[in-house]
Amino acid sequence: MVPMYLKYMGTETYGLIGLFAILQLCVQSLDMGITPTLSREVARSRAGATQSSALWQLLRSFEVIFVGLGLLILVGVAASANYISTGWIKAGHLDVVGVERSLVLMAASAWLRWFSGLYRGVVAGFEKQVWQSGMNAAIATAHSIVVIPFLAYVGATPVYFFTYQFAVSAIEFLLVSRKAYQLLPDVSDGSRIWFQFGAMQRVFRFSAIIAVTGGLWVIVTQTDKILLSKILSLSDFGLFSLATVVAGGIATLNLPLSNALLPRLTDLSARAEQVQLVSLYRNATQFVAVMACSAALFLALFSRPVLWVWTGNVHFADGAAVTLTLYALGNGVSALGAFPYYLQYAKGKLSLHLVGSILYLFVLVPSVVLLALKYGTVGAGSAWLGTNLLFLMCWVPYVHRRFLGPFHLSWLTRDVGIICVATATAEVTIKSLVVWPSDRFGAGILLFAFATLSVAAAAAASSFARGALAAAWVRFRAGRVAPSV
Image (cartoon, rainbow, N blue to C red; front, side, top):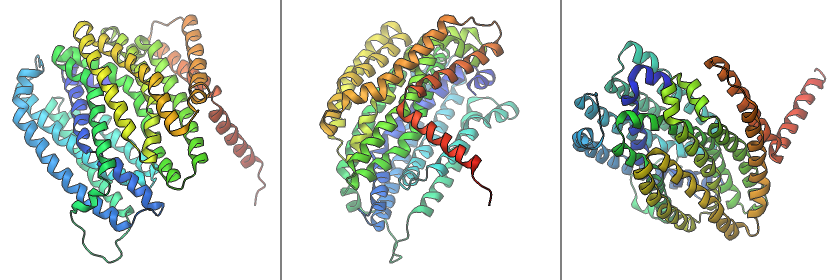
């Protein structure tokens, strides 16, 4: 829907939407590890490791923290809105008062979406991914698609846009919190549970490590965007945001799997079922490799036609193509490099993850600052890609060796390497042969076909995907020949 945003609001307002994305991630860094900790405790409770009353104590205690931090966020943004509007961003033709009001609405929306994450953690811990996926799809549709007629018939100013986003976030909060309360078991004695500091002490170490690493991750992933929001005009920052939104689709592909994978790995670890844990870990790696590698390589090799077909604007396509290439490749590598975190999360041992995050931070941030100041968006993208490659090749094998022994080489070649090589070969061959039509519709048909072929090539190279497709075919054939009752 981004081309529609650009049509109704322009690149300057879209630059504000890019700032909104940064603010949301910064607010989420204040989570302090609460959401994943609560999700893990739900999974442990289902495995019989904790009592239901302990879950309610944690939830009530965390709710108090979320409310307090949310009020601090709102006050802080309201107090600094004038400075951000006039001293940090280059607003161009936008009304300063409107930008200030938009910033406050951004903060309120980000707080509600962050608060909803607490209850999504409960839902994920109960492995209600089907319900959660449906809810996420509905809310995403409301946020991104239903807003278009609102902009067309009500108003397309930044204040109108962010007021609408706040209303949808409020609805999401109400629905997700209600579902979480329905899933949590009743306390047997029916007593009322309030904030209890002792309930948090039990999970403090695990939560604190996630909090620190989560904060580091926000610094890692947002340093380039924060820096560029100061360097670039709001219009150019809008083009940068355009490229990173497309590349961010790769991370979006990874999110549903992680939501399903973390509680299941935790459950297997709590039951000491190591063989099943390793098998699930490898199958999940192949699934992500099929999706992330094919998407990353496709966006990297066909960045300009993708942006042109998508937006219909040659200027946008030319201005964001190289940035999209670098960030797409970097996000693909990052999706694979996240797997050791899943393993450490399931084991409940995140101290090594903290060390890795700090090392990652010390490499990426100076690289981004130096290269972004000199080369702008291309420099920032190069730093992002290079650091993720270094992390995958140097740190991931060390973590694997610590937790799984002599495992990494097989994982890298069988579960990742073969899939990436097959996908790259198919896409480079396609690109060398294609002759692009002059119309967007024809180019779009070709891109759709190439994307399909890319996924097919990746799936053909994956033993997990081949096995899953073969099993699905057997079930389909069995259903067709089953005798009628």
